[in-house]
Amino acid sequence: MKSVLTIAGSDSSGGAGIQADLKTFAAHGVFGMSVITAVTAQNTQGVFAVQDITPEIIAKQMDAIFCDITVAAVKIGMVSQIETIKTIAAKLKEYGAINIVLDPVMVSKNGYHLLNPVAEATLVLELLPQATIVTPNIPEAEVITGQTIATLTDMEAAARTILALGPKNVLIKGGHLEGDSTDILFDGQEFIHFKSRRIETKNTHGTGCTLSSAIAANLSRGLPVTDAVARAKEYITIAIEHSLTIGKGVGPTHHFYTLYKKAGLLD
Picture (cartoon, rainbow, N blue to C red):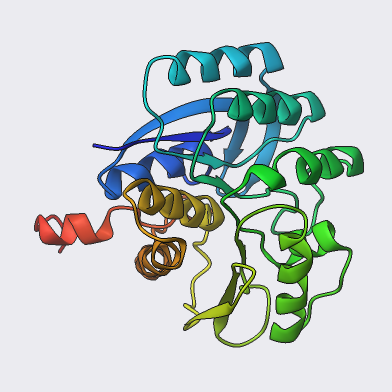
């Protein structure tokens, strides 16, 4: 069994962050491990408090894992502090980490910037060049590039700009555009469009975390990037289609729908 590491924040409601990542890893048949960067007090209605973990403890967590277990892929999510970003980048280099999937969590669903400008610049400088693939949504891609994105052509232009910053592949998620959802993958040679129908549901908590973790799990099992993304897209589409109405706000996706259905656990 391949072992995959998530470096991200904890979501107390279980729909996003390391909880979503670990569920996604389990659903893909890989062994999940975690380095926690922050503890949040949140639920389906919002985030109410955040306690960042010190860079020293983050470094110790990474040392404990990499010195003992072979890490077949790494997913990086919430890393909001400058020293946290620098620590993670240094440790990834120290241990020669492979199959790094960077989900640049910069902008919340309501448009709030989660990182200050210096932290955003640090993430771009320190982590993007190490990424096998980076998976920004449109607001995040606009932050990284400074470009306005309103069309698929704009998405392709932004992907070129981001690739020039160092990652091997760029996947820009198109969920913020009108109509069907189209994600665009760019490897420096060609653009591949992944088009999926838009599912009418408010329950989309943790979709970005889940997609990037699914890509990491697929990469760990030896799939090429294009296939890893294609399978991850299929997985997240099913998870959203069968999302769970839990809580009073934006509910989570169903990470185990396919497995539960095969096991006869669904009505």
